[in-house]
Amino acid sequence: MPGVSEIRVDDNNLYREETYTDLRVATIRRLVPVTAEGELDASRPMLFSGQTNLMSQAGPLPVECPIEAASLTEAIQKFPDAIKQAVERLVEEAREIRQREASRIVVPGGGMPGGGVPGGGGILSG
Image 1 (spheres, rainbow, N blue to C red):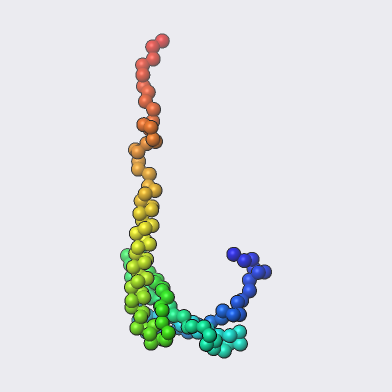
Image 2: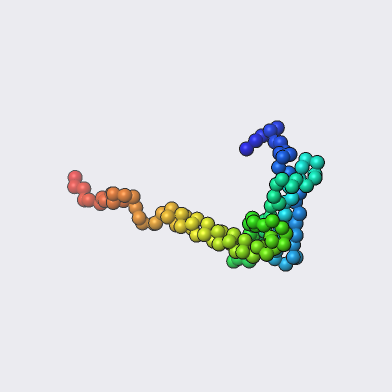
């Protein structure tokens, strides 16, 4: 990660951000490519992303995903499937994390390899 003195704006990769919402569940963000002068850069495609919140047992779960679209109309049409695919990826990632964590659990009483705690308790005679 660059230090503060090394931070530079990439003026060849600027976008104007526009946000559209239905005020219920859908938010679509459109990134319009622009030049350093703020003019439309028609040589690069617009980028779209979708955002929503789903209710879970732990409260609202924010979901964000890219939407492959060439227009706002197309992004609106593709929004439900894009969100559905993002949720499926989140569920799969959560399942993988749970499996990894479950395999790391130490079972009480499992002991150490080779028999665990050594025996003892013999009678000493003097």
